[in-house]
Image 1: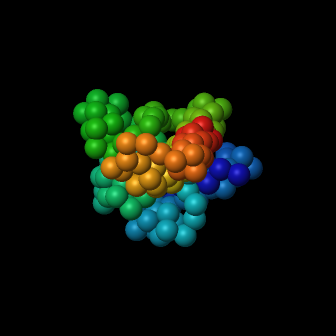
Image 2: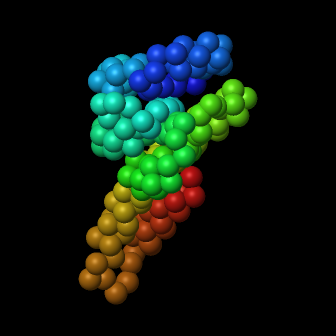
Length: 178
């Protein structure tokens, strides 16, 4: 189930969100940015939705605040105010995936959250694949160093040395093709 955090200073919006999506998502809601940070710390949040216009902190400011410690969740900004400067700010500063106008359409918002969750998981898979590639490249580099040490300052290799170089080269090839 998708873990969603929704931050909004208007409690009735949170109640409506929870009622609409509690069967589809694991819903976490709060009116307080400090509680939102606690929820991020305690739960594997995939998607964060924040209202833009709040008294203590704007949605963009909240996203800027949490970005260093929580870079992975996909962020969506929800607002009833059509403020183009806020949209530009959100995209440039808060790493916002989507800008959603209030009142939200339940079906569209459900689809957007599902899409955002897929993006979150795609990004996680890319990170894991990158880590795997780094490990394999490091092992390949170690094998290449062995070849260099076997062939350094030699004009000819013995049959045994040639076989060892061939085995090491094959090991590198397997690492890079995996």
